[in-house]
Length: 145
Image (cartoon, rainbow, N blue to C red; front, top):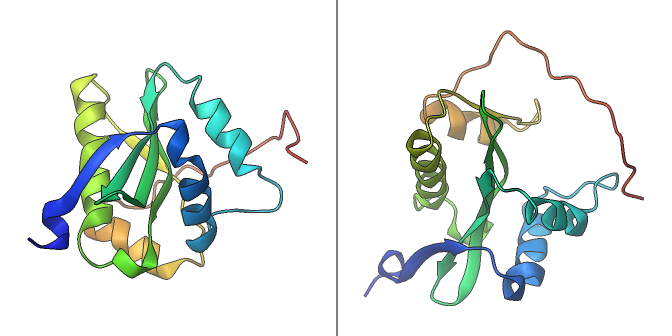
């Protein structure tokens, strides 16, 4: 049986929290100004989205947050353990997100990639994503520190 045969995408459960936080850290997604634990807590109150994790056996090797605001879908915290990258797991998680969003009638996905993250930009380009003409703006309402 290959590693790919032992995979499952399952809903986030509290038992996965520390593994997900470690995964995000390992993948370079954690920033000093964002508390990832608070992001998980906030996501768990989201009634319009999902927070699946990808398991290989019992090991958390991937995660993603997806939501729908009635106009666009959003994807955040897509992560695949570097040991498991290049095996199609990121694509599998994105297909999960796209299927979920299509099933609820979402016409478009938005996501953010840091402009200097060339490998991730290529990953999304290979999946058919392109840069929009819109520029993201942000305003912090609740500090995480």
